[in-house]
Structure formats: structure tokens, C-alpha cells
Length: 444
Image (cartoon, rainbow, N blue to C red; front, side, top):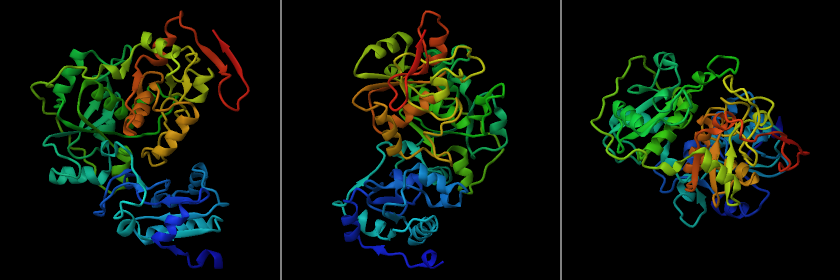
């Protein structure tokens, strides 16, 4: 009881500056994921986080599996922990939770906004493309006032994305949002991007031209692989797919609501069942696709596999990668593209646990970057992401794009197209180039 209620030491800025030079010290940022990424909510002169800090939002201490969360982040009780946030109260709550969990060396830093962000000599970092990953409060302000930080446009469209699941929109959506079925932008025959003419017409009818600010989100309804159409419950993943296709088409300002509809609900903002109809525009205003380099076809994918400075990245689950399952009820063949790099999405074709937090916000970008680096996925190479049909690949692409990576693309046909041609070789079993795993591979 004494250790639980003991007074926690508060560090000065000078003391913290000395501490962060020690590699064993663990700096924990308990602000929102959006503040960590770069959004400024308290008129601070610099947005972002203390260099080297890890993101652990204070609201997560209410999760029953908080211990598992900090363990997954590698926060060790054998090393010192320093907690900071926007308010001392939040930092104290999290610090006490660490102590309760058996962390003996926990301290607080209380001067982040007033001292750290105001001194340009003190090291900070932020997500390069944080402006394209928007927080709920930003979107609420835009809806209420027509203006918001880092927004300099006069026209925006909010899109509630879904796949053949209009009920996901009808049961409640963000006020002013139009519904967008992913089938408008990709064809159900191949699951590839629709033709330039089809995209132009679809975007025009949605009221979107190349200069429109588009904010996308979806509803996560716990996809079940046993359902006939699991993707219908993975709306936020569908939003990522739509975002990628819009970037490919040439929309210049594409944004994702960080955390999707769940983040809006978690912020206690109201939903509506009142539908908003799109207001078509006369023309898209540019050639489609404006960025053809973002989509790789199967012949280009084969060339990538031959190149030492390029990666074909499989954003699939381990069970798909080694050929235990195909991942989809409409794809029969099981296995992987030989030579592809494992990009590890999560548990299955409709969950992205390794790219998202439990509250569906995008995972700390340093963690994704570290995961990729260990697999040889680095920004000095061209990285072309693929999955089964493009959804998970689009989310991985979006993460790389947010990090400022420029030499990236999506192999749009993915495993669906590759496996449909019997002339294409494929691999099963554990490949020999996965670190720490005994090889047991078979190529056919």
C-alpha cells in the first residue's frame, strides 16, 4: 500500500534532458495518439512528441488488458519509466498504474507544453503526414464551423465507407457524411481499381474533384471469416482502400479519420441516421489516374521480385503466408508469392492488429517502421504492398505514405490475381529467409 500511494518524483526539464540520453530510460507519452503524431491542441508552438517517446494514451488504463498492451510495447519493469502528458493529472494516473503493475522506478515530467515545446533546442519528432490522419475533434470543428487547423480549403466531403453494407451507414454515421460503397471504386470481378472512366464518373457523382478535401472513415463491426462477406464488417479497412484509390486517381487532399467511427463515438460525439446525398460536380478537373505509378500490375510485380533494391511486401497473416489458409472464402489456392517479404498484417484478412491499436487508431508509426525494418522493408527501397485483393495493402501503403515514404505502390491484383494463373509459381511452408524460424519450404 505504501508503494502504491508514495509520492512520485517530478523531473525538471534539465533533469529530463539528462535522462533521455540514457538508452535504458523509457519515455511514455500519455496524450492522445493524434497529439503524439503532431496535432497541436494547447497552442503549443511545436507539435509532436519528445524524441524517442512511446505512445500510451491515458484512456487505455481503463482497458482490462492494459498490462498486455504495455508488454506488447516492450515497456520493461526492469528499466526506468518517465511519464508525461498535457496535464499533470493524466500523467500521475498513468504513473500510478505503472507502480501498481510492479514498476519500481517511475517518474513524471510536467512541463512538456510550457517548456519542452517552446524550446527549439529540445528534441521532438512527429509523423510526417499527420495532417492526413485527422482526430475526431478536428472533424467536429470542421463540421461545426467550416474551418479547422491545417485546413485551407473551401470544399470538403466526408465519406462513410463500406462494402455492400448500407446498414452500417443507416444505423448511424457522422453528420453530413455521404455513404461510399467500395464497389464504386473497385470492380468485384477482379477487386482491382476501376477504369479511369469509371473512377471519373464515380468521383464526379460523389461530389469529389481533384481539389476537394476528402475525409474517409468506416465502421468496425468485428468481421467473422465464417460470414459470406466478412469485408462488409470491416468498414474502416474499406475506407483505407478508398483513400488509396482516390490518391491514385489524383485527389490532392485525402484524409483518414484516425480510429474511424469508433474514435468519433469514443469522443462522445453524436451520430445521425439522417442521410446526406452527394452533390455531384461537373468534372473531376484532371486526368485519371494522376498517379499511375502507385499501382503495379502483375508483370511489374514479377520485375520487382527480381530486383535487389525493391520489395514485394505481403501484407497478409502468417497462416496465409505459409499456406495454411487462403484467407478468403472465394480464393481456393493457398500459399504465397515466392520471394515476397512478409509484412504481417495481423490475424486474418479482415483485421490489421499489427497496424492498429485496440481503439482502432493507427499504431505508433515508430513501431510499424521497426517491424518493417526487421523484415528489410526500408524507405531506400521501392516497396510494393499486396495482400489478397488490395484492402490490407492499401492500409500498409497509407502508413508508409504518412511516414513520408515516396517510393511506394500497391500490387493491385495481389494473391487473387497471382493464384488464378496456374503458370505462376507459389510457395507454402515456412520460408528459409525468416529470421529465427527453421526452414520448411516448398515451392510449386
